[in-house]
Amino acid sequence: MTQGPAPRALSDEALSDLLGGQRFGTLATTKRSGHPHLTTMLYSWDPEARVARFSTTADRVKVQHLRREPRAALHVQGGNVWSFAVVEGEAEVSEPTVVPGDAVGRELLSMIPADARPEDEDAFLRGLVDEHRVVIRLKAQRLYGTALDVEG
Image (cartoon, rainbow, N blue to C red; front, side, top):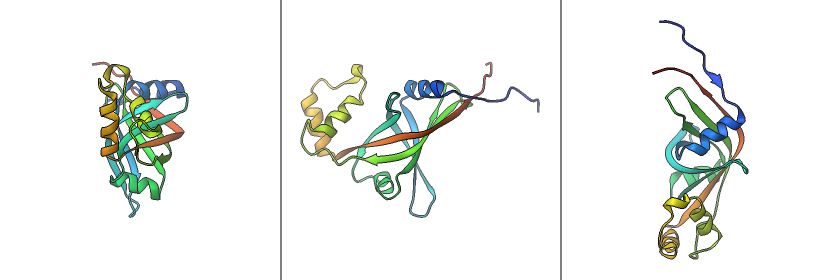
């Protein structure tokens, strides 16, 4: 096997750009047994606050894990299989949205890109309440990742 180029570490800015350029990643939480629980999640990255936000329902197992053990990680694939970014930090889980248009509901709505916003925001916000939606906020304490510059 021939030795190719080595992976290069990505700068904090490049990592943040990679996170902002993707929408799906794998959230890792910790089971009671200590094993990781991995879930593919749609997320929203806020580069200024260095927070990844996720929408989920209050009854999901990942919510139980994070309420017990807030340390978590998000793995995001880059432009090829040799490129990735990881956000490590502590997550907080909001209370469920209970009134259409409350602070949690508005935060959930703000996570949707402008071009994908629902036409009927009131109906959307009512649906969030019906689904007992919460926001998971993963506050980055560490970013890391690499890229491998390969042709083909």
